[in-house]
Image (cartoon, rainbow, N blue to C red; front, side):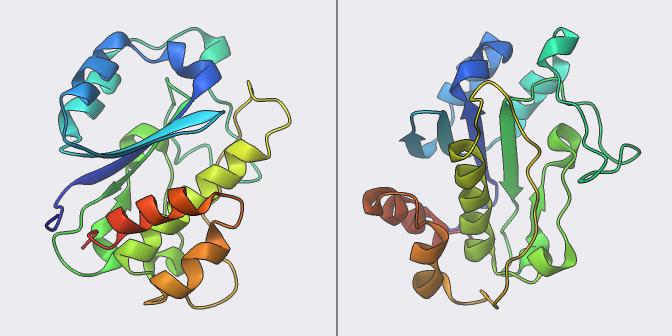
Length: 191
């Protein structure tokens, strides 16, 4: 694999996937898929060339209010986070043409999530792994699989810069080793 200029991770909660339009899945199937990980509660897809897929989502009319995600004042500011018409979809975009975490950006237009200063210090591969680790923990510990919680992007203690191999198994302690190795294989090319 070479360097990816536009790498995107989609995490879709299985019980809410019907709220995403069919056109989204059709466009997603046309992209170069680098990795697909099926979990009991969610599907994670890593793809290149995400722009057309995200355009498909943004053009769809908003679904009923029941499918929309409420903003938690404790974790997000309502004046900065846009409406999320598809709460079961979580996405992060890695614009990794150059080596540096400043070229990794959460897709604010679709999710409303920003990166804290501590997150911006991480290298792109570590950023990639940490994003997925947060998602996996959130999905796994939901008491009600139908309910979604807002993801919080907060760095844990310790400097993870350049520590991809040493830290990855700690971050993924609740995930089987084969999944870890597959994700690490993609992460090494996120530059």
